[in-house]
Length: 225
Length: 225
Image (cartoon, helix red, strand yellow):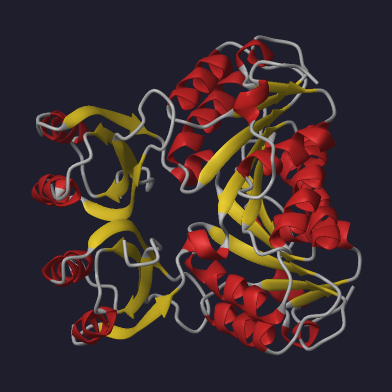
């Protein structure tokens, strides 16, 4: 961490050459960087088509300028840019999964509540995917624990149980609280909070994530509203 | 890429020890893996609190089982799990940024349209952040080009220009098309498509991203609806 506890972020635009990530990682290791995130992709359209972009978040470096200079000297590198990390730009993420009709209503509540928080300087984003079916939904729920900055999950549907419940239990152990709409199936029995109104479910999810609001799911754990 | 062109994904649960990412990366390099994504974090609550999770997406490996065995033998590693990559679980991302009232309406259209696509086997997710102010919004727009799987941006507001427009031009060069609501300011002049109705803007964004729908923003480039 740097002095403010916020990671640094860099992006590198370069020719698409195998082994470039390794070369870049070596330069960063020499500078003592502790890499938290990397993201590598090939640009598929636009003026920069077929070039490679590499994005890093890292901590532990005081002198970022000399790191940038050394990275710029790698021959295939076109440019190196410094950024704010995603945690400062998009902040904590409220994740909403389930049937389209309900996901849209929970999102309506969450986006409006997040708007009120973000206007006062917080950063809370609301990310959704409408998805149905026990198998597909259980995989999507389980994967929330691997999503960067995911802070709470809202399950929005009419019937969920079986493997979906197994995934709920699994991500709770990984520190992700789960809000469930009141619905058929075993998911509500295992959720940290059950809310009947989808708008309110979205609002409460954002309030839990907020560093300013007074609501904490674990203080009303297992209750139904 | 493996034979299906889909990257592999692994997560590693381990003690939080400096240098573990490097050790893991070395094992992966020996197996010939081309790493596309890494995500490293410390679990902040729940039963696995203070353990470290490492997530990778990679391509170029045929024998993933022997890689998993070797990774499991690193002494601090608790477990190694195989996953589907995020592109198979959450798919392409429609990003919606702007004022809360409008973001919620665009999301309503996008989530409902994505529901119809995902029910037929596609994977399209709808990710939002309500955010206002030229400076903050321009940073958030520019950062869309670094978001994994971001495929289209919808700018939902009542007045946007200046630095926000500069960011629009920048991400368009990186291959991200931009849909703007009809609004005051210079953003609509530079958007790839201007749509008056926020619900329709959300629907068209999803249709553009879909591999099944017949709509392509670039075929109606610069038009207003």
